[in-house]
Image 1 (cartoon, helix red, strand yellow):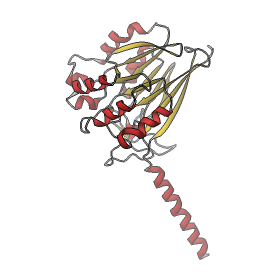
Image 2 (cartoon, rainbow, N blue to C red):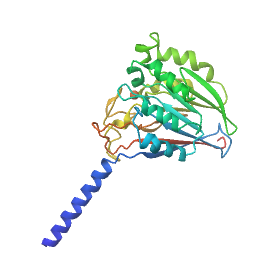
Image 3 (cartoon, helix red, strand yellow):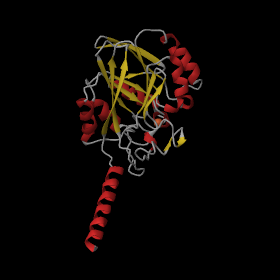
Image 4 (tube, protein in one colour):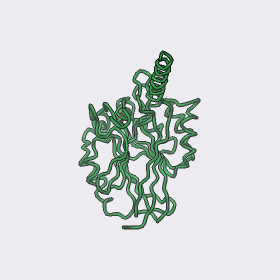
Length: 283
Ligand SMILES: [Fe+2]
């Protein structure tokens, strides 16, 4: 009887330790999503790697860890959806990251709030441009990827209003910048840092919106709670991280690659998001 009790206690302790390890696991993970569309040729696949909220953190020697993981995904496009640089951490992490990604795939970037909070947005943008990264500032580009017609658009983080463009109004900017894109044939992607503004983004006929900012809601409980708190959304955020459907629009919210030892992520490891857009026949 005593032996049984000891064995049971040991099993409980072992389970507790496993749960703790899983809860505080903080290595980079790959998160995969698949989107099927009749806007690409049947069986064609375009792969996007989405990175958000790096906050200039350095993964491995000179960013080799995160860069090699991204390279291994063989992306056709790399999307950086804001808060890649930070208002507190030195920009070195961003420089090393972009240096490592040189030549891997075309890179597109939109601002996040922290880049504005740095009060140094001009220098940050200049630095980013030096690495041949296309900054999307309420603009879009038409690109051909493996024979498929793709539009990739990006909107400024709304905090631009306090630091760079005092007359910025999201709705008006979206109208001015993307109304003429709505009827153009092709797969349309929007990079927009803040997920909670989806009600505005979704008026413009995009097929895919890519966001970050929420940090996965910081604390998660698998199958029970998808995020405890996020900036801009507060407690129990609706768009903490994952894939959301709004009719024909798919919204993917990255939980980001942010890492802060003083603010642990629980059941919420930093993630590299890999999105495969696959061509299918029309219904
Ligand atoms: Fe943010």
